Length: 581
Image (cartoon, rainbow, N blue to C red):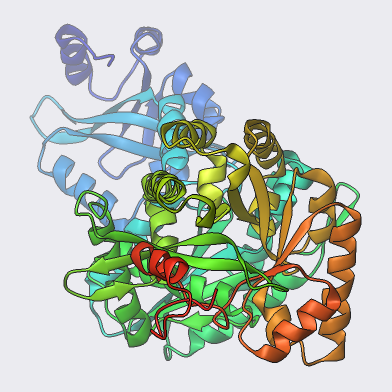
């Protein structure tokens, strides 16, 4: 920082306020300099001062220094400054001034009291250094640190701080947090390109700002991807948050016109209010996130408010998440097998592998309760690899011990994360080799929604599996949004009709659909397996329609490896746990 040397300062003090041209020439080298009297009237300035302020010397002399004051500082700021210099002390700090044209500039300022020959305070010398560029850089970096560069909204770090401050305030005011997820964004982003996806996010953020009128009581932020949050403070009642969420859902449901495309994209919104107190901002976001997932799963087009039921569910999910970490090493996972039979003869065709978790404290945990969590925390890969290896090992043992009575085929479900993982093909190939299984005996089941999620990756992986000789089944067929296109694009061998079709097969419409799908599969050279057969009437109908294979509780519930082997060796057993095959 530039300073005035002692000799020059002494000269100033001795000369009082009668400053010569020589003074002005000298101080031009010292920085931005001004002298005022004790009332704050400007007595002298140097050329640098005129240049940065935009005023001429003649315009400044005689004016009070308040002519340069901006609105960036509080009254308390200047009161502290005046109190310091009035006591004869030097003041140092950063001041934002306003130039003649209205622009703001920052100066690092040192104000030194000046005394006359009698030792009486006679005025002030202010030395300033222009730091506008440095301040702009700092502000820009702070903005980057706390704002999303794409949308300009506050980012996760910024909103977390705001939420935590709101929680810590504990004034009794009602507040709420809205968690917003844009439906179908990934499909739009992948199909129309990331550039258009970015424009969509920018338009969404624009609508968000306009809809909620961002203020001190309302803050909107982008967490990342297609996830946004809105913090609502000083609510009259917690229920007001639902009114805001309804308005946002209506706003987001309107079509977007972007780059020649008309895009429809709605939102799922979860709400957590101050009625369900959280200690931390992260807890509050997690609660709102959980409510959002409930809203998305319900597909009712309305927001969901977090309550004690969802809290219990969240606590159970956290417990499951913690227990899943070591579930394989604790040897708590068990495979069950549901027979797939030939409908005309009832002969065993194959088995579908179903995983079960037997927890020592909570007992049996079904896949629907832990598989989604396993996918979220990354445990689905080791669990999926365990299933492939254990199922193939059991299948290999049956082939040795049962010979021609062993199931002909083994059907193993594969998740989306497994299909995307680069090691899946190697894991399958290794299991086939380790247990001497003919590749054509192994069927990997994927849902059509899974393979359509990232079609390019799916095609590549499924083709590699197909090259091994492994068969590919499409599970829950008929429930996805691209059923017919996936038949053309993917190397599929088997269609598994969703059990919902079979459950509703008393209605003529479903019967026509089942028949059409069976005919289509036959024309494409694909096998059809009907899932969820539970009654003799359903079996008779499927036989009549030409469906060759099926599975369901009419034949057998899922069995342990031991019970399945017993049912094969003792098909006439009356035990309710044994299959009818």
